[in-house]
Amino acid sequence: MKKYNKEKAAIGFYITGHPLAIYEKELMNLIDLSFGEDPAEIDFNRVKTATMCGVISDVQIKLSKKGNKFVVFNLIDLYGSGECVAFGKLFETKQHLFENDKLVGVRGVPEENGDKLKLTVEEIYPIDGFIEMYAKNLVININGNLKDIRDLHQIKELVEQHPGTTKIFFALRENGSVKTFISKEYKVRASKELISNLKNIVGENNLTLN
Image 1 (cartoon, one colour):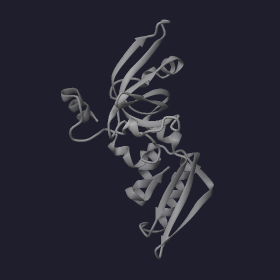
Image 2 (cartoon, helix red, strand yellow):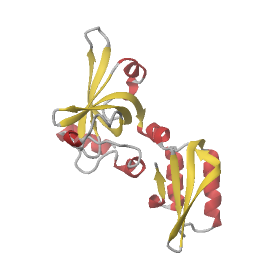
Image 3 (cartoon, helix red, strand yellow):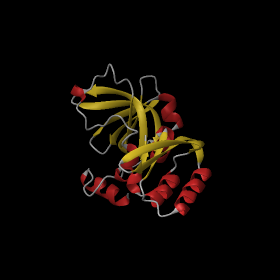
Image 4 (cartoon, helix red, strand yellow):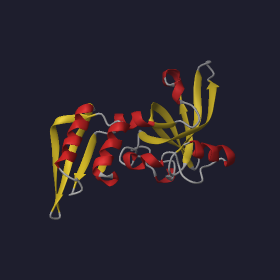
């Protein structure tokens, strides 16, 4: 992260990678809009709200005509960047998140801003908190990649240690077909620790959030 921030500070953009890249697989089913999209191709009558993630930059705290503070900032996602603005109580209560180089997830109202998108932010979370909040389902693929029955015990122990509201599904791949089972006993909190530990057991590509 420090390396990326130094690149951004030196030349204004990231060269060797994006701080959000390590979260890309977890986020791909949780976000529904990117600043890389062409606003001319978006039906804003249909897209009333949007969830987006990125790195905050160029933070400016301003005063409204009534003397109320609000914040304007740039959000750099994996495909582009755009202006965001947050007003009132949200800025007051979450001011610590509106800082340069913070990785965040936001939800708000998108609009056309010239040839770019602009977002009026209504919710903001640190990136790990965003994943926990918006991950409704956790899908674990089992296709012979588990070493032995001990791996299943490890998975059981992990989900017991992270109770929450995210549903757990097991996708069992056998003989070219897939059977999906939902856990009726457990739901989890999709924390960074849980995701990391599950990946160590089942493999990076056998875990999906949506």
